[in-house]
Length: 397
Image 1 (cartoon, rainbow, N blue to C red):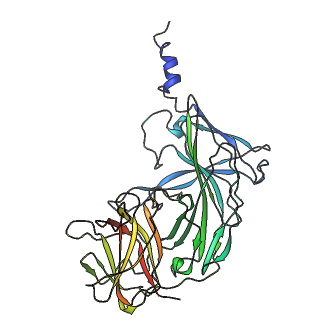
Image 2: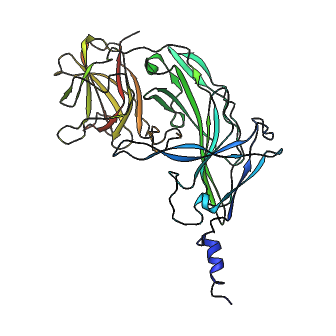
Image 3: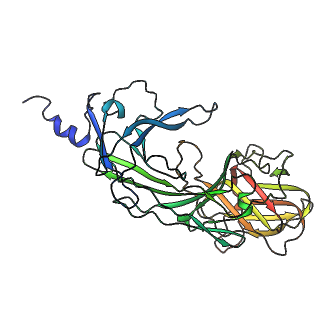
């Protein structure tokens, strides 16, 4: 008996044996029309990630670019041949152009309405992908509380793909203006104070599932992503009275404030005496009676269960409470993005707080986060802030 014979079962069970570079690796699956019938809309696109130039000392990023076409048959089934060299299953270390050696996307052809449907996965060896089907979302809006409550038709259950969660997002040229995680019981409501003047006036809804297909010899871990067409919101945005105002980070004065300038980039909150800041104060040009505060993209260093506190002052010395949010859900998820390591919104808090109707006239508005005491009392200390996008103060319409 060959000395290698006892190794064969071990190779099969543990996948310890590398493949030859030209050995075939097959990706199989099914493409469907929205009604579940076989796909008739032309070839699918298989993409791979290329590195994206990034500033020095920042995490590497990558963007998916077309790599191959996958053509389903008349029954919607496809069997696409790759090689072990393509997926790294040969385990040979070699220079490759890809930012990730076995990351792929499989997309239905581009839709004229701006929606898209795709599977994203890691592919090493033969794998059978879950069905890929377009989502007819039918996003619509119902007028509610001076804004709009979005509704849509849920993505139907397809094979063994788990039920999706839904994200609602509003974006501007430089970043995210708002993010709603419906899985955390956040209602999909948007209003003029949320979109301001730094978005394109649209909302974007994404159905997001993740799952796996595990076999003896290989496993496929995947994301099923469906982006609804951008939906035009039925109202215009409002500009806050705080636009361009100075601010203080704890005790540090910032005459040019990155958090009131109308830009949506996530900016590190300046440290104070080599420690993370715990509060941000917006210094308005003149006293106003504030009615709403909107905090965008706050990353809070602290345990789950944070609450937003808003206070006001005329002179920066005596402070009066203006409003307190409910306990905020732990921000552990964000929508799928093509550019990996781009900011998906995970860990970012987006909070709109309506203030007390009898709020006094103030010139300074201070925001901070903290975890209430078990008896519901105010926190014994303030949570630290690492990054922030924007803080906006609004008066009554």
